[in-house]
Length: 240
Image (cartoon, rainbow, N blue to C red; front, side):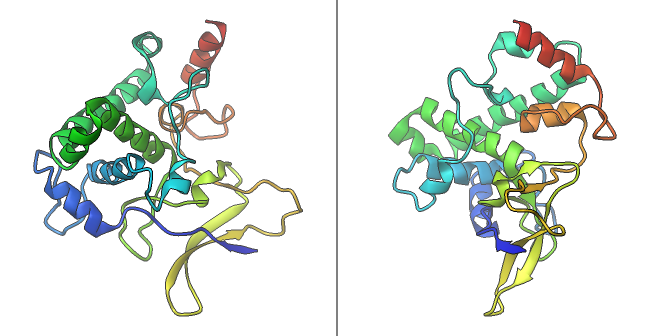
């Protein structure tokens, strides 16, 4: 069984244009033109700009991305100081601080550069929130697709709605359409009964990365680097 997973989002010309406005420190290309660590910054800026445009072509897809929602579990980018303090003394605290610091820095750089016109139209707070929402999507739903094109960090509609499994029911990769165009395809792994949930693998990561990036932790010992730190934190949060 094969299905198309739509278009990728994170094209290099757009990324280049945004990074050109962020000529600061690590926000640069290496000598070969490949994006360095801060390619996420450019993709986040692109997504944030469309989040602030209600008439965007991408609006139906944008509505599926993570958002700050009262009363529901939140990505660590939206945690308050008390919730962050619960991680003190754990490796999860370092991971959490690292991504929050990265996003704070990117918000400042994009606000003062590539997204400055949107700040004038919507204000600092709205732009920062859009960038954080974009990053929450990138940390939890983005893909690296180097096989056919060096696209770097991409959002892939439909494919990014699939849940994680250590034994995924779907594999994906580049294929060729009837007109010879390249397209991303998902294929079932073997025969699947009607009603079977489609799933992919998010990769093998420490529990601290699953918790801080994806917002969940797989069952204990399902991953080679499983530990109890985040699980104990989950119990504490449930009791508080």
